[in-house]
Image (cartoon, rainbow, N blue to C red; front, side, top):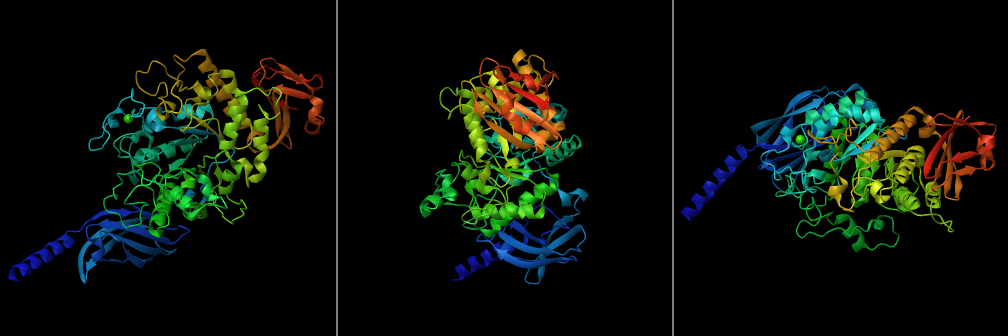
Length: 619
Ligand code: CA
């Protein structure tokens, strides 16, 4: 008995010491701002035994509304309100055990930058350059290997390994990106991915508030945003809220039991994404889809837990405000609980009404992709706040159309593109849809088109002249190719020539590129710059005519300007009888080829070269 009492007393002392030495391991968001539209802030505070203490704040305008303990005693969630009149500054959060102050934690409210209140996202005036940072350029070889991180090696010969590219590499080549004519960059995620392998791709985030040190520092990320902005380039942040990496710092001590889905026995998602819209989907199918893990190394976040939902929403706003972002690309948008993803997108857009978010929904069915765009009237009254989705249906139509001849079937060839565009009536905002020939998850467009340079040019011309917001994957401009490693992500995300010291080929200078590569680079550059300076291609209306004889003709037009695009899939040239286009051409007489400035009389009919895209200004 005496002995037990002794033990008990000893344990009390131990516990007491534990509390006294309690320190904060994590307080997130790392900081916040005064003058936000939403006056509420919810802090996640993680520290040894922290829930046994009572926090107090004495700072004008900041009030603790509610304190919630986690299921784990090492977490509390602090609901604060920040009054409109609150001044920026540092304050202490004092932690008490009964009436005794145990320690204090600093927290800071910053002033927002002037432009913050009117953030403008990307739109159809922009052309987006998608970059896999690890594979674009190694601007800082000293950060290739960082001690203490799980994946240590840099090996450019390993397609699944790290190659050393980083944020500095993108900063170094902003002039190239700007000269090419791009007005936005979308680097895939650069946040910490402290995983054993495949950490280069960035989608297994292990700390939502930390730049991966192999990518650079927070200051580099800020510098990228600032320098890009001075060159007229918006920075798009690639966000991931559906899942994290399995080495996230909280994985061994979750704040709540239901912080992640299937915490005890992993179940993998069914990828049956149609359950989100399906009138007849079973409960088990819905659960398996949204709660299943993306892969076994990526735990599925439970957005139905309101504290996790707040954590992720605030994290997104923190990045927008910290980096002064020009938009967000949201990964695996349709894999989260859809009430949560709605809350997430609408909270962000409510704080920044002119912002842009493109969500990933890899579906070839426009009924599915259009469901997520804001203002879409859905049968189930569901309203997401995404400004745009990605046009996977058009991507498939484009590639399929170019690979096959129309022949005797009017269902084939360019009719696929024509009919895909004809589906735009299901979208609330068709001109806001992101369009592309390829991205980091699919074979290179040049590869998809069987390494046919002419067809690749037609694809690029189409993407840069039809409606929507074009996105081009880095390397497409130099005919990047992943043959014969089809569907292999590591090869799809190949190193950009010239991004590493001592590369024998340098796409930034043109040194060592083949004639075809140079020709393609010049072509993409010309079209991007033409598009940038001719708003008829970015904001003009679209009128198209059904394809005949493997030729697809469409017009972009404004009141005082008109551009005609003719895509010819035939090897031989075709001469068009212009009378078919009388309703749009009206009194115009002249067509000027934008590539060589040669002028033609419309009355003679226009000749379209074989296997090419011809673009005319109609006057
Ligand atoms: Ca590096």
